[in-house]
Image (cartoon, rainbow, N blue to C red; front, side, top):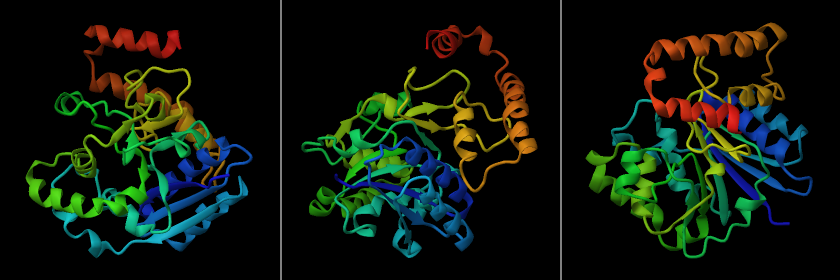
Length: 298
């Protein structure tokens, strides 16, 4: 059985969310799966490391913390991008050197819930491609590049990246295009590897951003990307209950009162906040199509 290598990257602020992602992977793994997690450590406290390591009780696995030397990313700190993207988002650009003994790795952002075992991704035939991912839902990006993927979930062939010196190409392209980068590492990866990206089924990155509008309507998501963060009170997300389901299986499980506040009360306040933010949503035909596909057709 080939080992399934999984990578996440986070600092201490995102340690709990990384733990929830890991929990969802472990709970949906097959009994025979051998999992090894590599967490690119942007400053995780020992307490959080201990709590994350305790997730081995769910299913036997390896959990490795990869200490990051932030000076390696000094050039990427100059990239102008969205405020929610931190320097940690660029760590994946040096995966092949940070994790030198691994040939293939499956990367997930910490705002993912995994709903299926990862064997399909681990045995995926990449052919001459270097990475695999799911199309992003940004129409402007797709218009310019029809194979522009979302970088929240990527299968990396680290062996090819080393052989073809892709890390150097990432940096060189960044320096030459620094003023045109809008979405950080996602733009860098898509431009440098254009033509070498295998497209996956959209079920592997269901980009969920509000109550109805998702990148794909499916009854069987394989990996849910929680673009509206469920840990922010009154945020809107159709799949928010999935996050709290797995949170309750971790060392950070909520007590009964807090659980009610973050589920029942939160769901009510989320709807109110969403309608205040978008009061004209009822005038958009696409809203009713999305509503039907989300709550009725599925």
